[in-house]
Length: 274
Image (cartoon, rainbow, N blue to C red; front, side, top):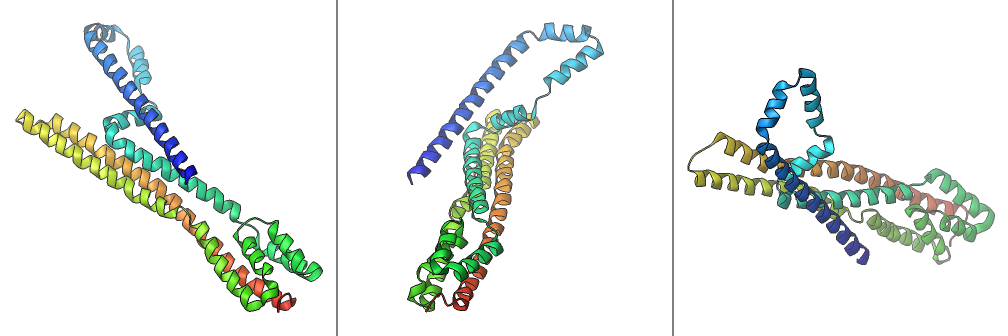
């Protein structure tokens, strides 16, 4: 719990710093725009006098990079509504990466592991097999260790122990998936909320002006829809990771069930349990 609170605090600080940086860049851009407007006559005269090659070079310099474009759209979508979507994306990606790393570490060569366990049972008995399971990572090795540790209590107890501990390992594999589902659903919802608020503000501006201006309506709709776009993009990325993680969990669970049956057969075959 403490580690989770620290992680959330770090993410909040990171997002807050990014938002403040973007806002500062927005202010600087506005100041630069005002200065450019004040010197518009000079710039226009210089542009007219400049040859076409020079004008094309200036246009290429004005083109924004991908990161700068993202920052610009982030500002246009209103930092107040874009920041929650960004938080959902960052936390969701952190959970996804943690799960991917955990599941990859939990994956082992099951066939080779079962051969080592059977060889240990034949040569050194239950204790040798326990040592092999203890020195191997992953949920399958943990299940084998729990079953072998209760070998002297009878095969029925071993089977119950394997089934019970398999449920525990399954819960560990699915840890954090509920939160990932929450952020997948929450990101587009926050985007839609920002869109609705933006549309309301656009209509309020129309009422205040007393007329329907195409520029006002177009700008208001464009800005309000940006939150939805970013929310959907965040949900799409997280959904891809979620499906990969789910398929990985299903694969490991199937291996666990198959390996559990093999353990019972090996113990009966080598008379390692009563």
